[in-house]
Length: 360
Image (cartoon, rainbow, N blue to C red; front, side):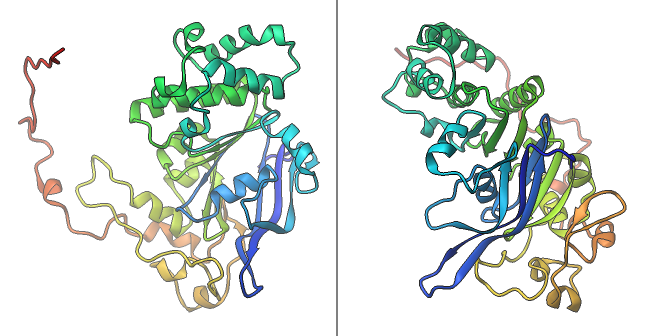
């Protein structure tokens, strides 16, 4: 990663206290650095700690969670040492979050223009007389049609993609230096996702922002991010360029994520990852992925691997990283659909002169 990080998380462990008084860790010794103009993708299964890490970088912890050790800095500011008022001055301004299901984050009884005005009032130095023009400008920047008319609408009058663009516009109101995005395209159709991803990529480039993109969608990550960080059971297990991680991963978990994706040219079923990750607080004596790994041996089950840099430049937590290329891409029999002759010219479905009308 860069030598001058704008967002820096070092050796951070996050957990909660159980009813018995035992500290249960959900993040363990995690380090992450992001520079201005750099986009990092954070991937992993649900419960791997992705969102917890992203929120911790903002100095935010869900109820019951706390930082056990480590640090989180934003442009040299210790986010774990600030009180709530000081944190609020940074969040939504220089450091903005675009959450999952952004439509739910919009106030349903407030018009779009007023919501953007509130964001400007809190996080900009503009005079009140400048707010109306700036609101239209923000909606234009996120490529919404007819922004002058849009300001008087309510969130329910917009499509999911339009609501997402409004949420992005609100994040931009404070002229952020960094964006944290938590599954920002969830629930959107494929075409709308593509437009949102293109918008985010262009905005990050134009504004030279640091960007942390949390997602389980590897396709989305490949479109937006320069580097990818893979998390498993509260630990970072792989870090590398997007090309390295998404094309030639050197960790069996990342390999498993890729082989579980259906592909149009694949004549066999995707290979699902068997088993489950260890639960928070569950005793793990060796590698957390060992019970699900086809390459694991006795050493993997008794000795926890450390992060190490391999010849390709990736940083990986695995004893078997040089054997990933030998792992199968599928171990299942071809599906009935896959058995069909894919070179056949007969159409499987055809439509001709179709018309649809609705009665008034």
